[in-house]
Length: 391
Image (cartoon, rainbow, N blue to C red; front, side, top):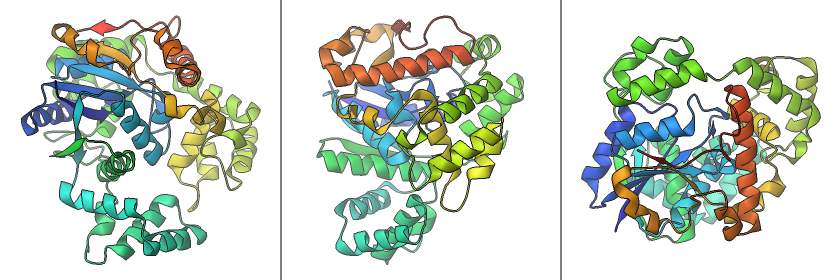
């Protein structure tokens, strides 16, 4: 059995994601589509707008065969760690022979950039270090160093400014570094851009979908949600919306009481600035605005805040090599897949079988699940109390 993986967040799942699944099935001879999906918190360093079960169910209704949860330590990390973590989870599933990547530009170009960054020639390393020493953010320094070594690629900066391209390149680099026999296939992104919040067009972005959710504009959202998923979406959003005030209060309290310097992305004195701002302000938006600068990007600041809330530290990440994905949902007619998921947790007790480090990472998922339950008014723990869904 050959499987194709799609790394995803589905925050929320919309018709553009359904298009990606359809095109993926056309592009390779895999008989199984496996999603590797963020759980309760996503890479934007925010709570997911819908619980993992609802998002996974929508994906299966739209053609996916099963959905595996990406551990929280990866899902709320920087792009390179997010990508490497997702590829690590994929490497635990031997049947996966393909990775389907949504991207804004041509796949061959993205592979060339990934190889240039992976090879790390002396010119590339020296330039990267030079730009970093000037105080440029890491992503900007990488773009400039890549542009320096790929002198014939005139649109390099433009290519590396597009979020899906950036993540696709990171996935490719992770595949190269792990020497995995996984073939990338590329699906050209259609519709509005990643950060375009326009509420019209054939395919809107997840950013626009979240905007409609914030406005409680369910009728505006309806054309962009698969018909068989829409009722479940609305029911979930009405019963268990993310309580932003509760999330803000819990996060600020964590910033005031937690050792921020131990967080994964904390460095260069940013932890001191965050602590100072948290003592001063009672609004996360004010803290973000106070700390943001050319050196400290908004995304990095938000990640540190979430890592402080969840207690994700460098010490936590030392166990990440043994992190395991967890099966969220399975198509009812594809229970045969279970025998190929030997490296994936199906039930809580599986983590003990995988070892102490796997349990450490699962405990972080449990902390995330408990907090997600609090801010969405659910009983129990959204990770440990979850049962496998068959759809």
